[in-house]
Length: 135
Image: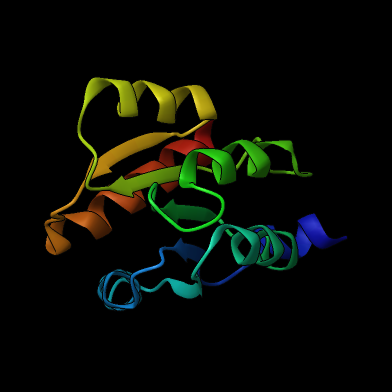
């Protein structure tokens, strides 16, 4: 029954995971402008708990965080019920090939680097979400 409720949402739910409150605020503003419901988590443990409770439509995940890093969180989300179906967008300052490859190996759907063009981010997120619904 929970899956049916999630499919009938009027507005998609995005989970933003970043230890930087400013980044979370900027992403929130960007996505709320285009109709997303936004929830936040400041670390990996809170992200996993929020994921299980919210069943978000998309996760935006920072790589560098205290405790569990974004790669570990991504891997853990993929192990959760339904976690293999949800798009995960890694949003980070890391732009080296090793980090990019590691993100995809951890299960990321896509990878974008900071500094983010905030006007383009909402288009990017909506495209990923739309593409994931067709898969």
